Length: 342
Image (cartoon, rainbow, N blue to C red; front, side, top):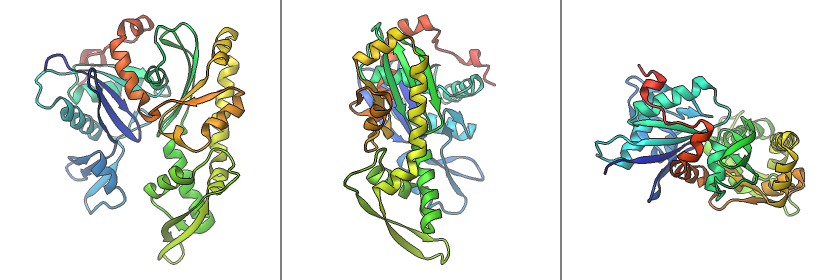
């Protein structure tokens, strides 16, 4: 196939690859299992994710890209190459790639990310911020002159932006996302119950009974792990409102950041947003009551986009098709010469 174009959502928790005309063709956890001695990857994606916490000797499982920053260059390159090859198969033509990136990433981190993707087999790369991609993926027309407020809550970061006519007029980003929620739940279980739980157990608690608002009718689940004192298997019953109290400081930070962004927004754009709804995207938008939490904080209607966890990836496809618009705002495809890859 000639002239492959790819859209890649390089999230901390998952990597989603899209192809124009086909839609989403790969959606897997962004985990890699590799041989510690040779640094060669053994598994990538779902199989590596389920191996996490169960690694045999000599094998390590990591997330090579966290919050848009590379934690291991060689492993990140192999992971991206694995997924690109999985999509384009044996095509001899290198693809152009539009990749999403957190608004928190620095210029150095962006150059490194472009370098990784090109070294993994791309011809050229254009990085577009997560909230802009999320807005496009949620159905916002890039040519629409009126403003919309998008909140993308991913695995590593939360990116908020006021988007109008294909660009971001205001932006706010925090290093709070699904992974941080999991860490807080793990800490809470250890400190209150003396129970050590794994990352996937914390994620299951978050998805099953996690809440951003106080529940009138509470829910209960059993958490299993290892007792910190005896070292033996143990289990405890926890409630949804316990997890709400555990995560409340983080949700308060998100709400305060959204309010602060509004205070910097021009009156005309605020009027546009007031006439429409705030859009929630990202995997963590599925946490119970998070739309209600933002609605109460902002005094506006808040809606969760359909297939919210895939909005950023869908938005990369829109960006590929609308590069003539993004080009006006400085978005360019960069080659290996532009980033001086060694």
